[in-house]
Amino acid sequence: MKVEALVVGAGIGGLVAALELRKAGIDVRIFESAREVRPLGVGINLLPHCVRHLDELGAMERLLEIGVSASEQVFFNKFGQRIWTDARGLAAGYKWPQISIHRGELQVALMNLVRERISADRIHLGWHLEAFENRPDGVAAHFIDRANGDAKRQAKGDILIGADGIHSTVRKQFYPDEGPAKWNGALIYRAVSETRPFLSGRSHFMAGGAQTLIGYPISKAHMDRGCSLTNWAARFFIDPARGFAREDWNRRGDIADFLPRYENWRFDWFDMPELIKSAPAVWEFPMVDRDPLPQWTFGRATLMGDAAHAMYPLGSNGASQSIIDANALANALKSEENIESALHAYENDRRPKTARIVLHNRQGGPERIVRMCEERAPEGFDDIEKVIPMVELLGIIDEYKKLASFDLETVNR
Ligand SMILES: Cc1cc2nc3c(=O)[nH]c(=O)nc-3n(C[C@H](O)[C@H](O)[C@H](O)COP(=O)(O)OP(=O)(O)OC[C@H]3O[C@@H](n4cnc5c(N)ncnc54)[C@H](O)[C@@H]3O)c2cc1C
Image 1: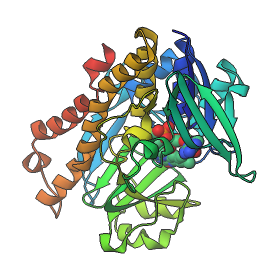
Image 2 (image 1 turned 180 degrees about the vertical axis):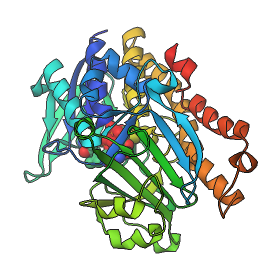
Image 3 (image 1 turned 135 degrees about the vertical axis):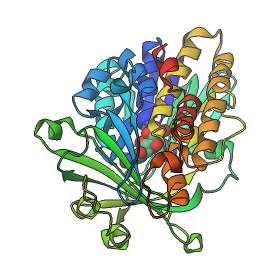
């Protein structure tokens, strides 16, 4: 069928959607609120099931030139004792790697691919969606240019895809009374620091209990120079009565506000206070998500990525699931007979799967292993098997992989 898609949002999901739709023979235009795409953000993970789609789009090799193919995720308690090592990506037998990469560099690389494959004039920067109308024969979207006196613009197409992130305007139009994102009382401070390589050099660590610190390398260029550009995130709970400032990916934080919490975390394999102190800047973000929705598709408009299923940043699924959405949407449009049935087939496939991840992440995702370990052995342990038997531990890890569809068998098949 001949379709022109309007994609709202040139984040990770929107850009991959554009590439997928074009590959499926669908005309596409992208509308992004920001006037320029700058490499904002810190690290992000692409799990093998979404890397598989990126590979099919011809993007994987380019991303491996920028990011790091992760080899393992190692869980530690807050004393730096190793709880478990979970092999990752190629090292775990997947046919595709797990790629850890700077989010902004990923976005710029995807944007360049869209320019090459689709054309720069299909990308409209500085177009902020205000509202849209579902019409019997298509959609009409209304934009403003916020840097240009709110100048008004309009675009028409056959379908509209809301890939406009956690503060989605498209979602708000569907659910005007939904209110703000839900906060669970935790704050996350994120940053990147130049450090020496640690563990395997391609390892992710997750250390702590109720309070955690995670870290992983994200730059191939640094690795080639024998050092590590280490993405890290410190997460801890504060008194919810204190409230939180609206989630904004670009709000600067102050190291002094949380460094004392990690002062004793000096392990023989890594010095956490040094890691924190060596960051040139930190960003503060409340741990928020949104409730799963009963419906994503209304007429000829639908949702994807964070707009559809914003989730806690646990288990490396935020970007990965948005990429899988993009692939599923393009496949449905390619194979179904008409637009309505395609959008519903896409939603029927993706909405229940992503809802399960949102809800599971509220229970702590696979990272709940460190919290369990702290509850059962608050002073540390001599034998981890007596704290969390391996069968229980593997049960938690494998359950999450199956739930998020990235268990080895599913991905390789
Ligand atoms: C600036 C920024 C930095 C981030 N940094 C990190 C990070 O360091 N680590 C991490 O794990 N996740 C980060 N994220 C979130 C992460 O990118 C997403 O969770 C995930 O990749 C899913 O992507 P998405 O495309 O659904 O949403 P996003 O990547 O959030 O993209 C949404 C896009 O829509 C645009 N947009 C929003 N409203 C409108 C509108 N009304 N009209 C037009 N365009 C609109 C936004 O400008 C943005 O480009 C960041 C997101 C942003 C926007």
